[in-house]
Image (cartoon, rainbow, N blue to C red):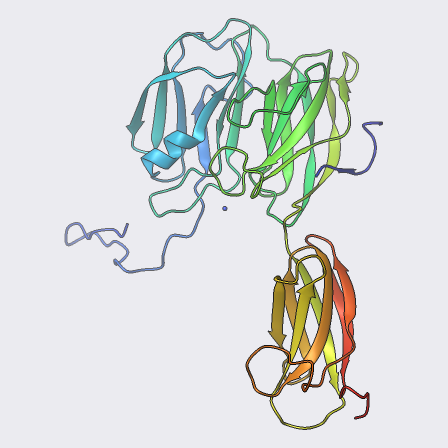
Length: 347
């Protein structure tokens, strides 16, 4: 597949008053809801010639909760950390062993890092540096259109195309890394040229830094990206990612031909694959309804819940004809119309 294809599918303290002449915001003011950011690092991203015995440091925009932040900070390829030390908003890492000479590293902070008020870092941050004399000039960049989840903080793991198998989310075995920012953009830096690469997208939706098949999104990008001396930078490429477990939305209107006030009009949806899965919604005064349901085929009908027990009694409660609706994850089916009638079809 050409890299120029337009789209590829892959499968977020109160301050004390000090002194009489100094005014501080009163305690009990508006809560801090602003996500923290990484404001500087040592080394800087893109730096070459980093000493193999360098100390690594990260400075954040505000005071961070130590444990969640330390757990979210990782180095790839992996190198053990001997000591973590905080100086105000700056975290410094002393490694257990020297870095490898003439090698590119990615120091990254996942979205599970929190400030002291519990706000997650959402998009995370990645710093790429090299112990070699020059910084590798290869780059892959682009943007992500995510369906069924927020794209910010999604990892783009980059592997040499010759490598086989499914990535290890906890092993940090990728050759390079990109993170999707709050504007849905990503950049994978520090790639050797020439080279052929593949991307995997990993959305850590439960922020535990490991892939959980029933919660997270892990999907290969079905193409090989080639970087050459003539073309060391590729992009922007556009990726569409879908959360297959994201619910779908069903909206519509019930047309009531009964014109009586007995009971309550409701809409019931029963999974065509598993009859124990049931969705139920009341209609508003204009007859509109909305249901959020998992993907798959559903049988939908309106009914007059005369005894108000939230369960349709087919033998005696009026209903519409059943309507089959096939739902796709993270999509919307609108303008459904259900006509409420008595069982013999007469008004």
